[in-house]
Image (cartoon, rainbow, N blue to C red; front, top):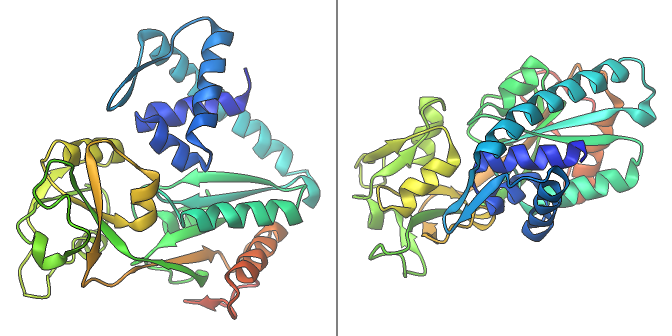
Length: 305
């Protein structure tokens, strides 16, 4: 048993789905499944009850996950203490992201960064809905992959990628077999939504108002993505996400259909201009090289990337 296995278990417990957790961890689903089964063999108990819609924790799994969270928190405190005294070669870089982040680009960016900076440990950290910039300001992450729209005032940033949007519908929905849909085609579909995201962020994702002046209908609200997807699969509403989220969060009960007539998602890389971690500069340089574009822009003070 190691911390990596415990981190995997907690991710699956939160997502309630091995495939979705694998996407959030940027690993393959078979690798995650193997690690979980290995952990169950080591502990001698069944932790997860698998079913067609995902997984549930067994009674043993609930107890183990509770202790795993404590162990991971304790390990993080150990790393924090060491980082205060460590040289650059042993430093960490905490990368904040939401849902699928920048999709495969984020995975390529991490691989390129780690190849060029083998002494720096990259720690992906999931952020709450539309809170990536807040995590930067609060100091809980060092760089963030930010979904727009977002307020980046006072932060340095650079454009990272653009993604078309897709809409998720229940597989049995009459429109689920279409190869593409216009936003006007789904004007009567209720949209599931998060409770905690800022209102303007939610409105942008819902395309509110619509080109014809109509307003979206609202369906179930929840801050847990797994439960939102369950609502969609059950036909209680639709969901609009970037294309890579549809790829990462595959669900047997959901069809993902390209959405036309709406602007794409813009993804930025952001960091605090007053940071003192050289790993941030190295990460920004790697992102700029990988993206193959010009200089970073800043919405506030000029960054040092």
